[in-house]
Image (cartoon, rainbow, N blue to C red; front, side):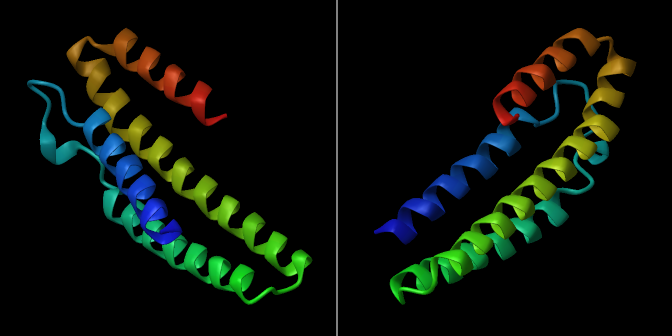
Length: 117
């Protein structure tokens, strides 16, 4: 059951990223999210890492070993988030500047960062 819930949360986050960062009307869709595949690949590796961590817990591995895996997973998630942020700046903010929607896009970024940090 926990495995299914974890996959559902991951799927929602990916969908949220896709939906929130989808191109606005009039934007060039091909200029959007050049690093989407890289983020998706990283999330797949993180998903496998989480499954491995769950197995460690079920096998009653040493607490310090388990905690180190939490640290590694958190670092991997942070790296994926940084890539999404870089991609957003390089594509969405750039596109917003050329289309005159800079203020709205910056506010969306501020709102997202306040939840992330």
